[in-house]
Length: 111
Length: 113
Image (tube, rainbow over all chains, first blue to last red; front, side):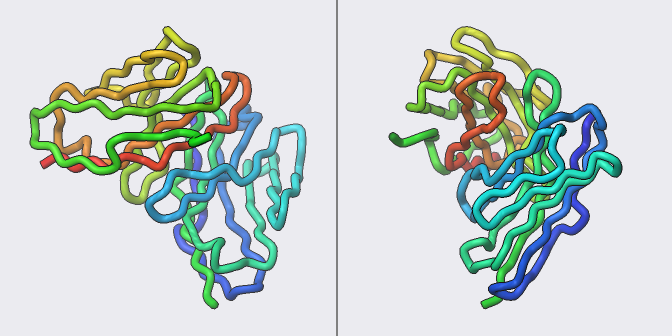
């Protein structure tokens, strides 16, 4: 079955620096991926998505990169702010349009 | 527009007790989902409802039942709670099954003693 994992469980960055959160997936047939942000005590919040026919997609201060060759996904956050501190999940679309989530990376922004 | 709402926010149960977690969305979404989130793990799908009147099992359905009461509401029932069901439960919805972006509620924290 599918598995979605993250290389690092925690990441600390200085305020103003760029953050890169990585994710690996195992199902080469997956065609849709989402990044979610989850703040403490809240539900996951959609950040950005990407389809497998794209390599890169940009949003406001965020960029998602997809490398299908090595089945790797990354989320880049520009000029990281204290409000970016949260747990970030990648999710992979499985069969029946259900999502499979990774274990998450906790991002801590140091003021 | 409240989005996805869940009740209760917190609940403590004794082993063997039953309870129903409520979820409602006011976005006119067709599909609704129940997930559980355990420490150090991502969300795992329990059950989902692609449309009103239909429900299907997800990755971890054992010990749970669901009801899609109407288009707005999707409830999750634990008939006989077990300590292994201690978790945070999230409800989510999407407009169409073909659109994958899921919108999540704030979660219900459940402790089974």
